[in-house]
Image (cartoon, rainbow over all chains, first blue to last red; front, side, top):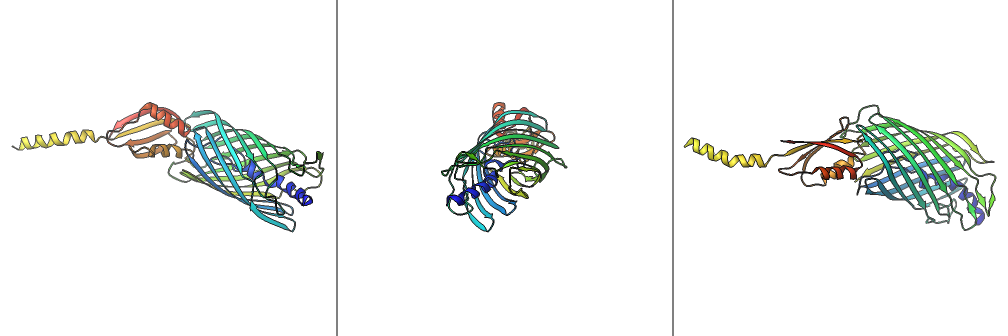
Length: 276
Length: 97
């Protein structure tokens, strides 16, 4: 059983990016966070479909998430994924680890038709999913993430930047995925001026970097574990009043993984979101 | 007699006309760049029972709200409302309709 959990956890080091660091909402980029929060007492319902391929490893995930606006600058939420995983000839599906998140916008500068702001965000993913089955839908660890994000939006142009650090916990069998530093730059353009009552489209292009330390087993570093991956990610946000659809594809442009590992082929996401 | 009747009719109608005056609030707001993000403003206004009509012009940064007969929103209430929605209230122009 322990032998089986090791490669599974390696896969999840890649796969659970969605659950803990990739899943971003509101009028922010598709694959990276922005400083957007929710209006006070507002409720956000978010669902998404996610697909990633890496050699003979594949992950399909759907997730549902809820957020609540504690104030006009502070939001808290919870997300629950359901995953279907494939690793070689092994397949498994089930509920993944639950994620709790919060974001606080600590700086905002408003002008006519523009908003510029910064926020801090925190997430924690406790070990809630079942570790049975191969590949496992849970990491068997409690992980935490902290980040800082900046965003500027106008009636035409958008730009964002963010940096996040994910601290991965150690499992019962002594396996620990390497900590990960995530850095993102994103830009967006709205080709037609917005009208509050009409559908609105913003086209996006992101650069997403993931720099991970080697995993450890009983304190010893594993040669064939993580490294760097950088992605170019085109996407779009389509909204009408309080309903949004977001979609994007992450395409790897730089792979510098340690040792012998499968490189990412692509990741894709389709999101639906509703504000109440 | 006709004059008396007309005067009586006018006396009855006039207060009703003046009391039923709705008020259009044209509110200058900064930070409006995205319709989806601005939904919170509509939500906050429509939670109030005294709002009859709501509209928004993102390019001009103006939120237009028509209040029902004789209703009012104070400047401090507006400031709080926009703060809760995540935007910056700047000024208001009230026009009886």
